[in-house]
Image (tube, rainbow, N blue to C red; front, side):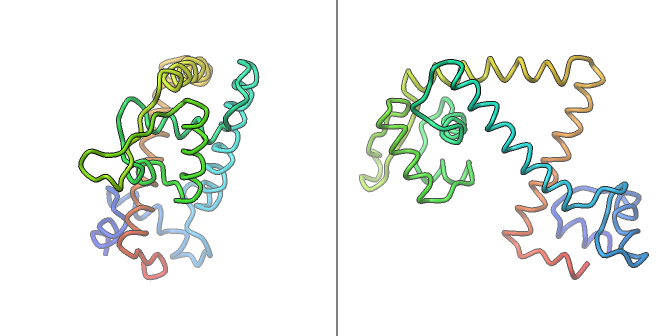
Length: 189
């Protein structure tokens, strides 16, 4: 059963970790909890952190006199990065909805942060890349982000904690992605 659970979840857990996760359910608990933290609490915290980070980006945009794009559009610029992407690749990488991505891309092109060209391989497809203005903005945001990073990871112990948190979040992302793609059935554990 444990091997099946690990395979379906798409994560690597040892037997002791699985026992810890399943123990509350075996005791008749309504939710599987890890160390007293309900899974839903983690999900809600991730959502709050994302919103708070967008608030930080909004403050920094305002502080720097940038009022022609939203924090979500900045995140899209960071997703594009230094690569040339198709619109489809951008949507897949950033988990954007098609209509929202189209609107945001149109604004980013109009405001000069993104250059859009027709693909040489497929004339029906568009390729996008950051303009010089887009690169400058991303560099500025990365510098500001580094300052925030140093605030929460100022010591070696804090850095290690942050690395563990990152690995845990990657495992959650992989498990949820696999559940969506392959039809995970948590009720059937």
